[in-house]
Length: 102
Image (cartoon, rainbow, N blue to C red; front, side, top):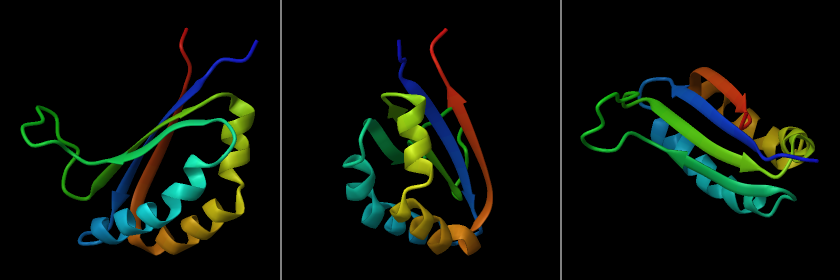
């Protein structure tokens, strides 16, 4: 039995680079949403009034995939490799948390 996989990716942009990364996300988003098993893939930023903001240079990507195999296919998809190379120099840090329901 396959269970959905949840991903929280915290991307920290170099100062002043967040908007450029978000623009690259916007261009790549249709390809990701068309991938097999993609349920949710949303780049987010702090909401006004957040009690624990990540900060002005951070993007939190909220993802849900139908299976771990679908996530793995996503990670090596050609459009993701292109996207990764486009934003690599704009990132200061990233942490990818892969989660499942207990």
